[in-house]
Amino acid sequence: VQLVESGGGLVQAGGALRLSCAASGSTVTMYAMGWYRQGPGKQRELVAVIPSGGRPNYADSVKGRFTISRDNGKNTVYLQMNSLKPEDTAVYYCNAAGWSGEAYWGQGTQVTVSS
Image 1 (cartoon, rainbow, N blue to C red):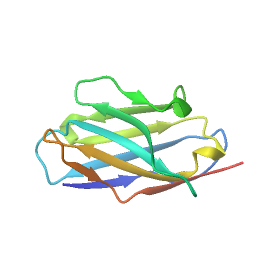
Image 2: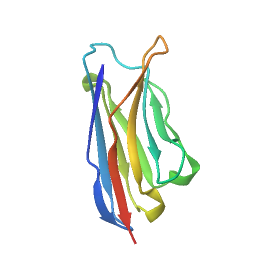
Image 3: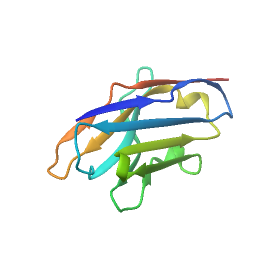
Image 4: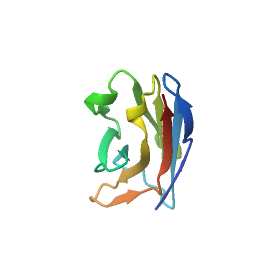
């Protein structure tokens, strides 16, 4: 299974970006898909995750600003990021979890928010 991310870039504070991540190489819907991020000098942290047929969970720092959604037919997950802040600057990684516990990661996409 390969995860291909797109949508990162440079945006001013208060702006918006939409990340996409498509899983290829599997015809099975992933159990859960989500986004993590790793800022400069920081550990990788969960941003948002959405299980198949379940409700999404968000990190407290992004609640009310970010929205995660998925298209099971396309095995694709999206992250709509609004009201971006400089502290959202990070490399964002897509993650997919299979029903047997296997985990897959994307290559990461850079999001930079300027003040």
